[in-house]
Length: 422
Image (cartoon, rainbow, N blue to C red; front, side, top):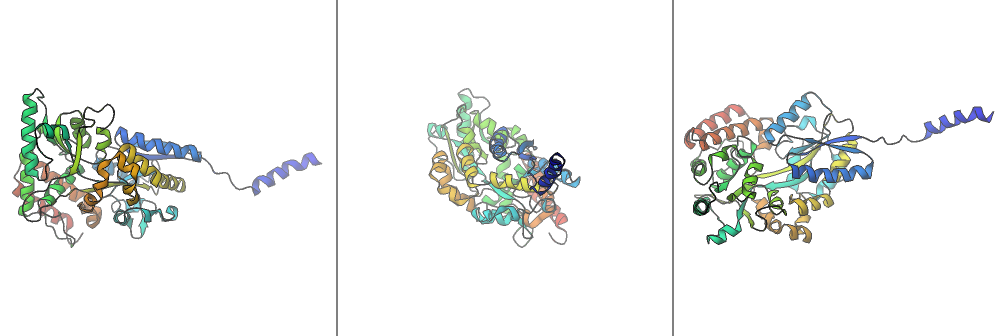
């Protein structure tokens, strides 16, 4: 009789036991460049070892505009191929209908991040992304060459142009035929939008759209800003810069072929890597200011968040990985090893972070002076706004039109995009 009872007892015990947590495979979009992917996957795989889950990387396009287009296509199809996406600071309002509210999973961690970024990531009371790292445009320079030519780091765009011309001429005469004075991101993409916003704001030209929603881009200061940038092409910057994104500019600068570079903070740790030709020869400062009334130092506010797709098959598991990846410990490690700027103010006072990245100690005021893109105001219309600015700026840099004509046309396009209201 006992032999007949054991199978039934085993079944009862199995039904009474809590269900075992099944291992899940989580696909995360770590980034586009090799250093980003390496850093991200190192930490994601550490989480996987701790939890028993599996992680896979999805390599998104390097161009942010192209990456957004890919995600919108995936979301339109309600694809579950990606669980966690890397969200640009301008995307929460655009992707709001396709992202999971992380509030039930965050356990209040959002209070430890910069409030402005958390506010940016919160749409209609839903926390759509946890801050991962923040950014602003910075000026990188060859400190050894400035010392060689006895020039200080520039504080104005005019000073940058004059110093770049001097050093470029000297280095080319010494045999570096391809040496450039200044490299930046002039490829038709969101990267150029960021550069254009910096130029305009630094000349006192304001934002494209003011806080009340009025279109303000067509003004004399903005004309001066674009005119100044156009003069760089073919003089201190090669025509090839018209096709440069971030990694293109970094490659030229890190190979010792440029004096100045506009880029994001991530470029610092790469310039200091053991195999970098410019290791120990690089300085960092705020971007220069323009001239005229309202001129100031202005870097575009950037940064990336981690968000969970509404179409993920394992949203709770994905959210757990997001909280791990945006934790203080992981942000500290990424700051020390790869100079990703933390979104947690407390880490800017951490001795180990400052020892690894001396310039970070002075970045808080730089972030406070950063200029935001009008993505929160424009919402779903922002991609069209950005594309209009990029097209206008690229045409000016390529000498296809004048700054005056480009800004008049841009103003008209923005009015059509806005129609009655944003």
